[in-house]
Length: 303
Image 1 (spheres, rainbow, N blue to C red):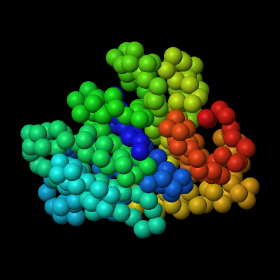
Image 2 (image 1 turned 30 degrees about the vertical axis):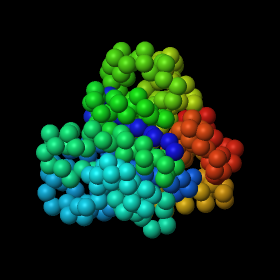
Image 3 (image 1 turned 135 degrees about the horizontal axis):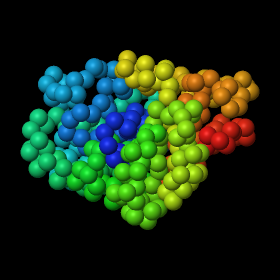
């Protein structure tokens, strides 16, 4: 139903980890049927943190668990007009007790073949896949990649992944500012966020007020537990347990959302969930009530 494109002006903006946590919250907390996928040829780690398999991002070798499924298979079925719901799910990896689908990236080892056979048809494939899920979340190449720019222009929501780096923000708005001002469905997401930085979300909104407002930007704070789970390839379990503990703590009044006093992991889930809620509001899909909406005790400095 909705296509959410994750993009960064430069590589290394925590784009993939941001997509993971927002997609998992949409699936686990908001009960959306989410398809996660990537359009990158190499240097991407979308699959390993979810499937528990150590992946070599520099090699296409020995990835047998993804053979006969994934992006290549989905594009093939799409070309034959056979990408119906059941077929799409057969191309994906699924996870018990979730509404999450993971479409692994290409197994093609030749860039020319990838550009010719996959890139030329992937937008059409995504359009067909949208019919069977609530959200397609796409991890794109950073920078001025041709396919990424095409996906950005057709996105229902464009998520621009940033860090608290003045040079990158200045570069982004200098090169793309006119287009971004006109873009109505854009969301700026700060990954690995440090609330103690001089470039916190409040100061960034003041400095770049032409682009940022309280409704179109959010944060994913740094979390040691999340990064450890990322390195150990078990983020699904960590997020499932973390969301459960956070919701229980909120309902029992054990979590106090006071400035600087909230525990790091609870702060991480609180802010990540608020960011997801804002994204879904832009998409007119925030129809699930959660503890986040009912708490009534939000520290507005961090919204």
